[in-house]
Length: 288
Image (cartoon, rainbow, N blue to C red; front, side, top):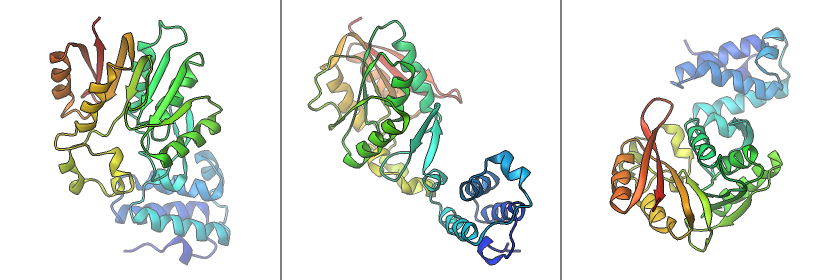
């Protein structure tokens, strides 16, 4: 039986709205209906999870009910929850998100940890984040290493504007540069990190509905997903300092392919696993 929408209910309490919204999202086939209902209800009421429980009997205002219904319809249309919330938490940072850049993924926190480990013995490391998007990786590095000189680049001007907003939101000083990969960047950098587009183009037709709201420019990269990564690798030796490290996040299906190509080109290579144990991160060093 179809559940009534929040906008159709009078004197709707927090508890009833949560229950009805979760039921709607379940019928719509959303993967996390309870979580989505809680997050959207928290957004319109300005209550955290504990507050929603404590104030379960609180009646929503007409404006709150209207806003909740508008958000519910957008989520049912499979707009990403993060876009509806506007700001998400990632690695201890608060980040504005929008369709201008890829939503930061949990697995990229592993790339952040690998980068911090690579730079742990360096004083004032010079770090470059290529294809920064929201700025998440660059800002995470600057937050953990205030002594680092962090530069972040992206080919997309809207993405750089979003990253600049996030730097201001978190009070972190990162230099942002518009560039096509490493074109125009001279370095030298002790550490180059990147989460480039790495999905094969053939994945696009079968992608999850929410993925349609991410920029294709940030997702797909040629037949095997490595077109951009290969270009980046070819340019990297020109900007890395002696002994410098390159760290890339890739698809588990193609990380081994690029690892073999790098070893053939004289790089010392290590492959690291993600949170599920799949090979995903590629570490390269030249001539050491």
